[in-house]
Length: 236
Image (cartoon, rainbow, N blue to C red; front, side, top):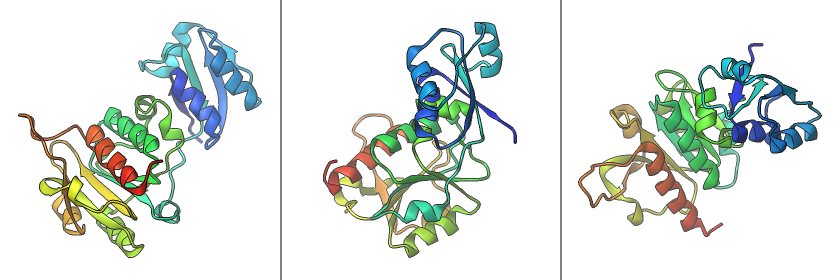
């Protein structure tokens, strides 16, 4: 099994707290107490190392003097995500920037989404850079990788979800009923949601823009739509 490196204080702490994947070792160049306590709770002793060694393990990422060696990211199955009561699901079509994916996962965790669905091909997975950008939220959010997003959309509709593709000119999100089982599909910033995927959705949704810029960053748009769906359900 090829191990992955998680770097940064928050990502390492959340990897330890979630216990979703095995942490083999924690390496610290700064003596962080929060990391030490989280590691001790998992029965791990933190190894001290030079900052140069941590830098090497982090591969140039912003590590804050902390890295952990962990098993590969544990992707979920779509069925597990849809097994919850009235699922709130986010679908990403073609997001290739790990920082955007990480920010989306952070928003999904904050809004209490039941899962995020991403394609296996032509899109970024939950890489160490995405974990760092998510501030460790990736360790708590279910993420499913699907070979065929159109088929995944059909599966979600068959499970009783209403599926909406985010698109300029779509129905304003304030005019849609997002209170029940819902999946929101967002595309890459350059291409948007692909035609085949969009045609499989029940409709389109948009975020009205009052300024000169036509659209929001995918992570910001995800946050707006997810929190609106959560508000419609009654917060929290």
